[in-house]
Length: 181
Image 1 (cartoon, rainbow, N blue to C red):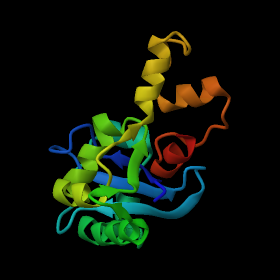
Image 2: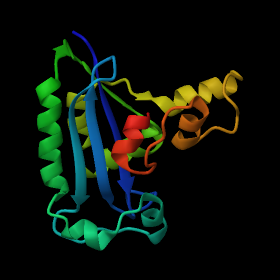
Image 3: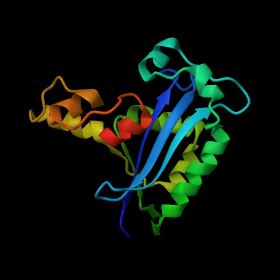
Image 4: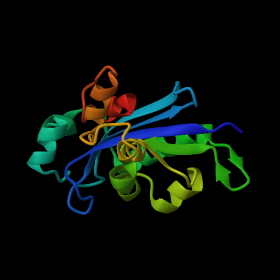
């Protein structure tokens, strides 16, 4: 059984999922050579109510709520759950109790997983489909900084991309952040 990465990122209406909503999410299934096998680029809204978002968060991610809600591609969290689960199950293989699908991203342990589990893929469903190990690339960057191999000033994904000389993309859009990671 070969592992696959479930690379993902989110853009939100704030810093706390109890006080703001999830607005976009991008999920890509990648092989170990980082070739994209499948992807979902989701524009999101709550089921049955308007989204809650702080002006500061919208300034960072560039999302205009009015345009976002008018876009026919914007779907509810419930619809997004069905799409995500279908994509994941299409690639899922289990070796006993272990999934071949390893979550991966930049700062997902401290941020994105909480949002995804709050709005799109509840924790029990997450655990039933995804591997228990998570690869948060930000942890690798932090290790390389502590070891003295990366400058201590690095932190944001954009600063790491710039330092490594990787072509930059539009930071704070879910898909581009995944592709930079």
